[in-house]
Amino acid sequence: MVRTRFAPSPTGYLHLGGARTALFSWAFARHHQGIFILRVEDTDLERSTPENTQVILDAMKWLNLDYDEGPFYQMQRMDRYREVIGQMLEAGTAYYCYASREELDAMREQQQARGEKPRYDRRWRDSQATPPAGVSPVVRFKNPLDGAVVIDDLVKGRIVVNNSELDDLIIARSDGTPTYNFCVVVDDWDMQITHVIRGDDHINNTPRQINILRALGAPLPQYAHLSMILGPDGEKLSKRHGSVSVLDYEEAGFLPEAMLNYLARLGWAKGDEELFDMQQFINMFDLAGVSKSAARFDPEKLAWVSAHHLKQADLQRLAELVKPFMLRDGCDPAPMSGQAPDLPAVIELLRERVKTIEELADAAVYFYRPLEPDAALLAQHVPAGILPVMAEMLAAFEALEWTREAIHDAMKSTVAAHGLKLPKVAMPLRILITGESQTPSVDAVLALIGKEEVLRRLGGQLARLV
Image (cartoon, rainbow, N blue to C red):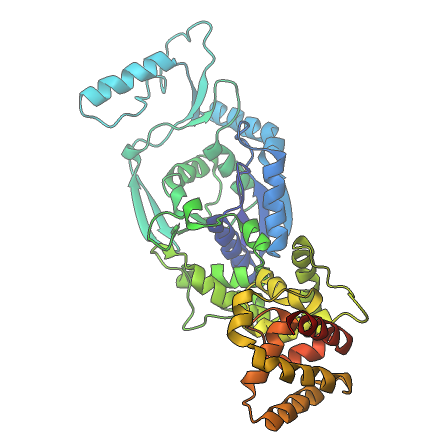
């Protein structure tokens, strides 16, 4: 059975690259009816915090990347790591190294002076010397001295690393705590991981981890290393390109399914498919479609994908998502006078014109709170000569049964009576009632705002302007 894992370090937020790695690992497991595991690699005691861990869990929850096992925490597995290190020392695949920091610094200086690549010279590997007093040793792995590690990477292709290029890795520090590369190996072994899908910044770790797995007699997973995500300018994605934390996109009003759809296409393709839901993605996903080249983040493409998913989303769900954004801006989508406009109906009218929940909330404000028209808009679109026509519209509206069709017919009758074109009436009405010059069809907008509120707004504006 396929078993994949996502193993973030809680030293900061979950960034876009990590979220894409989680998505690909999740989708690969789901495609093969396998198991997806969440593992928190929290051994960096200085930078790992419970708050950062919670941010990662919250981001996974928002993205709906459900895991079958976990979360497992490395700090809760220290006894297991020490047990395996003890077994390796006993088997002779690891050894104590008593070299001091001063000795190691001098060794590197000498190597650099000779033009050599600095590396540990294995002085304690097979030493019979008496350990120096008062020195707490590290534990090093006995890396093979000859041969090569061959990795048939499922994305990058064949990678060959000579063992002569690898030194004897520290697997436990002098205080006894195991190191990252060792913990990962034991975790992947114990958790029976079959496929390690991770960023290509880990490629240098892979041959070392494979050698440790072989020394333990453990089965080797298959590896797939994903290329990084670059900013629009081709540089490494960073804060200067905008939000890089996944939860920042929730705050900006993106739907999780839109974020996942966009991330899925960052470095993966299946024909010309651009827009899909997650079940479709699971059905399509394979590692053969993952590009070897770095992907480039495109905010405009994300906005386009987001607009598509907004058009597909359930209206009641969107209403629940929009409310907090409106309240944050001081606009309560509740009755002002009489009956408030139906928020799902407002959303249905507006969502063709927006790309995010935040934009949707901004666009909905004038349905629930009158906006004062800008003086420039009034000067441009509401000349004094149109005010008598607006007064006639007010009188006509007072007599109407309030439907979109009746509003439209009243506007047409007034236009015909004055020999005007429809925009000459529609635009002043729009500005006086909504305070905006850009809205959906004005008859649809007025129908939703409601008769009582329209009469109140239009009457108030005319009383002020006449």
